[in-house]
Length: 211
Image 1 (tube, helix red, strand yellow):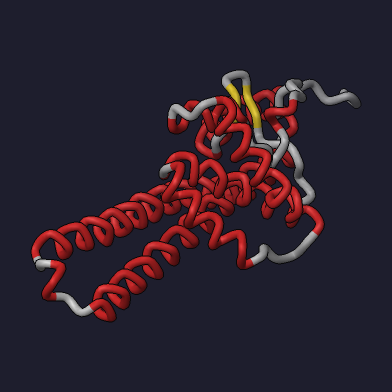
Image 2: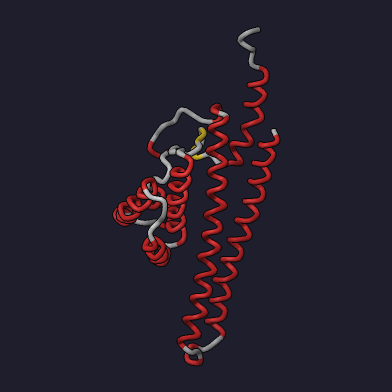
C-alpha cells in the first residue's frame, strides 16, 4: 500500500509539473509575440532578433523535453501497475494498443487534416518511431523534422508524434509493448489507481485454496 501511495503522489506531482511547464511555454511564446509587436522591425538588428528567437526556441524545447520525461514516468508507472495487478488489464488486443503506434484517424482529427495528408505524416514518422525499438538513441534529424512538423501541421499533430516517441522509449526500456487499457480505451495512471481499491479488496476476500 505504501507503493500505491507513492504512485498517487507521483500522479499529483507530475500533473502539477506538466501544468507549470505548459504555462511557462505559453508565457515564452506570448512574450515573443508582445516583443515583436512593440518594437518596429526596422529598429531591430537582425542578429538581436535571431539571438532572442533562438533563446526562446531553446527554452521551449527544454520545457517540452521535461514534459516528455514526466509523461514517460507516468506511462512507466501505469505499465508497472498493470504488470503487478493483472486484473487492471482488459482482454482487448487490437492494434490500437501497440506502444508507439500512430493512428491516421487521430492525426486527421487533431488538425482536420485530409486523409492523404494524415497518411503521409504517419508514413513519414512511424518508421522513425519504430526504429527506437532497435536503437538506444534518437537521431538529431528527428528533432529538426519535429520543429518543421509543428510549424506545418500544428501543435496537436506535433504532440501526437511526440507521444509516439515517448511510448516507444518506455516500451524499449521496460519491454512493455501494449498500452494500459480499459473498456473506454487507453487507461491513464489516475484511472488505474481509481480502479485499484476494488481489485485489492477482491484479492483479500478471495477464498484460499487450502481452506
